[in-house]
View 1 (cartoon, helix red, strand yellow):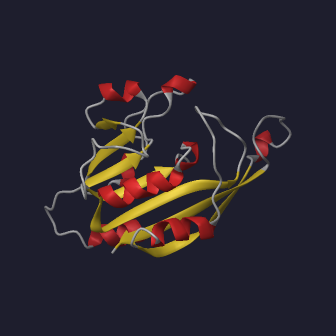
View 2 (cartoon, helix red, strand yellow):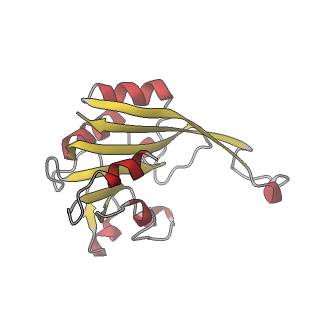
View 3 (tube, one colour):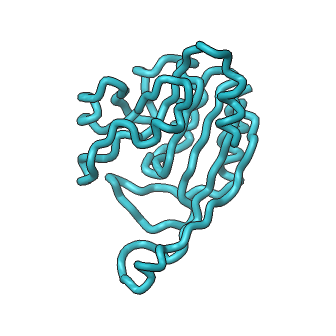
Length: 181
């Protein structure tokens, strides 16, 4: 609901940018490349992807760089920054949060969903897990006001309950929504 409330406050006809960090999929890890997985979250703003996968360079709406060091993204360029189970893949997540703070406009929103209790998934690496307190500290230390933080608990689909695979029967994802002050 924070994103919807934010979009209501945007003046009609205003332009802006929504950045989906890691939004192209890791073709190097065998995933299919996508160009608009979370586009429906971008509301009235232009949808952009930041991804380290060189294959993303073929997309018109992509910035190709390391999410922990992305000089290709301008300071305060994005109204909304977003990631979905991506930040754990960086060996330096604190640097990723520095970049998020640098490229998010003052007053802009940042939303992230990261693993807390989740299977190992190296695409290409899997380095960290985050508690709600870790996300809160990472945001507050970078001049963001935390609007919401907590856990999303997901269960294996009933149709797959008896299958043995690498997925946990129950996973915990930590989420945070914050606004740059």
